[in-house]
Length: 118
Image (tube, rainbow, N blue to C red):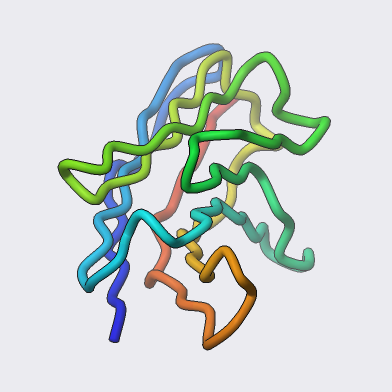
């Protein structure tokens, strides 16, 4: 069983930065692809960034050059460094994990609120 616990959300002015963290509780962290999603009110949940077990990364076009995803295997934690934040980045951010083989369930954290004021 896997549990994901996010932290680091908050209120920030446009142009500011936040770093989100997601702690992976369970076994075999190194075999899971970790992802960050976000969902703003009235919108569908969208994929923001992923990081593979080998630390290969992907990003949504809307955050490229501003957000950086990384993982620390020793701490079983994935991070999302968000710079130059914009009001349109405001959303609940969710951590997600799925096995690299795509077998088994995927897991979600409870979400952390990010609000960017203009």
